[in-house]
Every structure is written in structure tokens, then in C-alpha cells.
Amino acid sequence: MGPAELQRATTVARRYFVEGKAKTEIADELGISRYKVARILDECREQGIVRIEIGVPTAVDSELSEQLRVAFGLQHALVVKVTSPDVVTLRRELGTAAAELLTEIVTEDDVLGVSWGRTLDAMARALTALAPCSIVQMTGVTGAVGANSADLVRQLAAVSRGPAYPIYAPLVVSDERTANALYSQPGIAAATSRFPSITKAAVAIGSWDPEGSQFHAALTPAMLASLRHEDIAAEVCSMLLTEDGTPLDGDISRLTISIGADQLRRIPEVIAVAGGASKARAIHSVLRGGLARSVVTDESAARLLLDSHAQITE
Image (cartoon, rainbow, N blue to C red; front, side, top):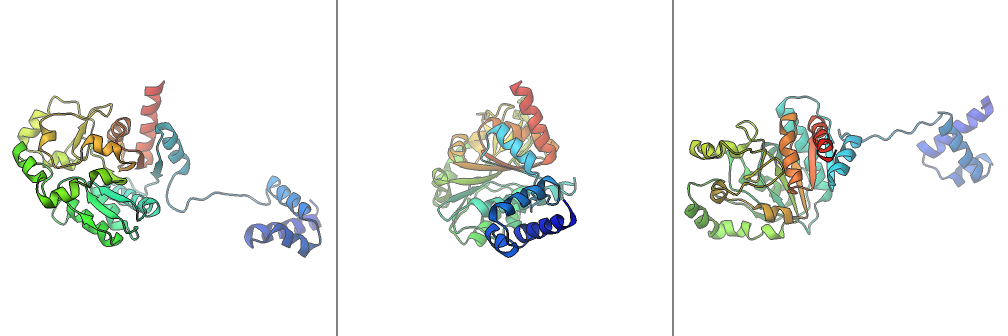
């Protein structure tokens, strides 16, 4: 382009891309046809006068997210670009992304189920807006005082201003008779009877070790000893899963106050929130078992998940 053509091209580009004017408006202003405006805009892109970049406002790797979504056939996949490898930052930034997703997809017609986890606690703290939906606790209480599953439900309900159905009972009890008695209590039944009505859920995923699972920390030494020879890959909603996502049906499952595997699978959208390379095997187990249809994770876990998926499908 000569200097006059370049001047006109930059004017057209500025009017269209920056000021948001229609092509007909630009044509009238410059005394040229609408089709000439369209040709000039095409030339601006071809010659690099205009460069279009797609920016994602939140710290999400959109390309890696889409690869993960397609590979596992997910409804939603968010791969967060965490700013620091430390676990506190990881939980906070995953929790923030999960909070933003809930704000976007949950409606007042939904019933939102939640389990417990330190990342979900970070999610609740980051949540600033939520449709006025019902909130249902899906597991008994575990975690520290002031930061447990019942508190999580309370925090979410305070934002949504919808009805809350907490479970004021321990996650793990000493014997099956106690578990059955608790399930029959009216307050607990008010929550568990709503499990079939849950339409969306947010769950944490535990790797089977003291640092990576709140459920592991809730078991007695005798209970842990009974699981010593099991190859446990993951824990979700107090369910212990094998490598391929099959729930273990042992004595421990009858001592927990929690939603069951079949009930969890029937929820239209379960969002698993977990990250870090140490959680990749556990996340993979949950996805293979069909216990989550969406995931919020970080880059390190996402790449390991894609590698594992590729190995299985080769």
C-alpha cells in the first residue's frame, strides 16, 4: 500500500475494530462502497495491519482445556494456569475457577450438591454470586471445626440465599448399626432424600494418602489396616476407587454417611475440582469410572491425564 492507501486502511480498521462502527457507516463517511470497506478490512488482516488475538480473561489454558474436554468427553473442562506450585495457591486458584463456573452454569431451577475438600472450601470462599438454588450436602462431616462440609453448605447458602440441607453427622462411624440409625434421623434424611433431585454437584477428589485425602485422615488405624492390600487409586465422596474407577464394596462403605456411586452417576453434571501432579491418577480414576462429567484442574494434572488417556487408547 502507498501512503494514502495505508492512511485510509488504518482509518477503516480503527472505525470498525476499535469504534465498533458498521461497514455501511464507514462507507458513507469515506465516500466508498460497503464492499470496498470489506476488501480493505481483509487486506488489513492479510498485511498485518490488524492482528486479532483471542484473550481469555481468567487464567485458563483454553487450548489444553479443549483437549481435555474432547479426550474424556466432558461437559466442561477448565485447565487453570496456577501462578505458584505451592498447594495453598493451587487450591485457592482452582477454587476461584470452580466458583466462577458455578456462578455461570447454576440456575434457580438446579439443586446443587456438594461434598467436602479443602479446594471446595476455597471455592466457597471465592464465590460471590450464585442463583437462589437449593444446596444439599452429600457427605457427612469431616475436616476441621469451622472448615468442614456442614460449614461449606452454610457458606454456599449464604451466597445463593436458597434452602440448605446439611448433614450434621460424622462422615465415618464405628459400626453399621450406628450408620443405619443416623440415616433414619429426620434432619439427615432431609438431605439424603434429596440426593435423587441433585442436578449439579461439585466434588473434591482425594489421592489415597494422609496428605491428599480428608477421608484417609478420618479412618481409624484398624480401618486403614483393613485396606492395606487394596490397590486404591482415588477417593471421592468417601468412595474408594480402583485404577479403572470401580468403587470398592467393602466394610468401610457401610460405615459412611454419604451419597452412593450409582446416585452420583445419575447426577446430570458432576464437577470434579482437583489438581496437582499427585492427584492426576486419582482424577483419571474418577473420570474413567463415570463419576464426574466436568473437571477443574491445573496444567500439570491435565497433561498427565492426557498422557494416561493416550496410553490406554493406543
